Length: 503
Image (cartoon, rainbow, N blue to C red; front, side, top):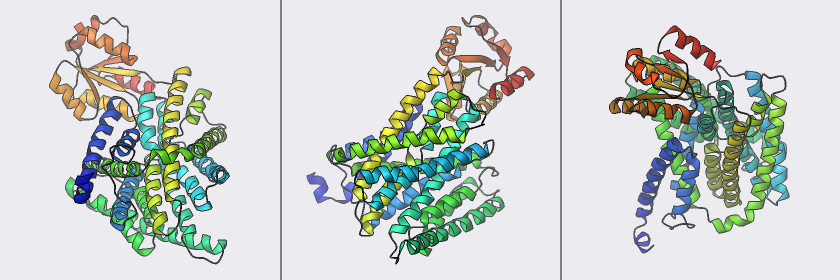
């Protein structure tokens, strides 16, 4: 465009506009329709790049842009690892899933990539990045499928653990190709030393941050937000200063060690880091997709589909091996095998290393980003479609609850059910109260009469109705055209039902 040619700074400003519009649209579509955010963000990037209207022409290999992207990737990884929670997770099954999943990918995927003619560096980096999964895709998918709460938690935690493991493996792999050793043993040694230095920095920041946050527990939420951000960015910057290409490892380790659960402002801190991460990953996704030319992806379709087939085979084998003797039904095993999306961290790493490869004077950055772009989109689409079918065929979806009347007690009940992975739906005849419940990230609906409640029960396949005040809702409940157990919020019956429901 002529305007952009005479005003290069406008490219950056337009990029910021596209990123913000993409972030808003992605979040709305994810919450209302269930479309994974990554799909919307990548679509915006393609539309803004040479395959679309062509308004974004940023050179991602320039030092300034590359530093901005590296920082955005570091923020995304820090937020992802802060969410790892190993409580209430079967440790043996989780460890076996991570071990078999990562190990088989590192063995099988490079063979497939080399078969299609990819050089050793690109083939190895594809495998390392494919170790990570897509917890930010799996989370919304679990909310949509609503399987047994323990199974949903296991799958989400597995994704977070594999993300952390994949980042370290990718760092070691890339470091082994960017040293100047005298032999393979020397290369491995230098790679391990570089990553180990990053891990050491991450441990120092993580442990120091853990104790500092406890000491600062009474500080304002604004101060704690900035301090948490300082920990992540500080770990990345110091690790890069100590040993180049070790910053991502430091960020992951720091995020695993920092604990927000004991802080009084935990909810505000988590909301802040999630919003910041959403902005960072939107930047990464849009800028990556804006560099892709669809016509140049055609030669990489066949290799990408071959890699996807290998990932599916690896997933099936790893699930079968890791669930031997585990209390998991066969229908749930099939569902686990159908969950294999690659998501935010895969895109972030693809963007990061696609810009680092040419910076080191090596070739293959564009091929790495292109093939992983196809792999990520393919796994998201296939995994989503197959898992929906599996859930319906094996009837694995947990039913919803209708909670009539919005008050502090019913909101607390809804949050307890939601935290266990189920879907409570709050209803009320007051529009303002419904808006208040939605501001607390709860599913709430405005109803006028019993017909509205009956329709909602059938639509959501509700299992029971919990009421705030029996007197207020007695007439409405009596007119319902469905027969469901009706429980009073906070009663012994509601507590017993909760324990039975979440078991």
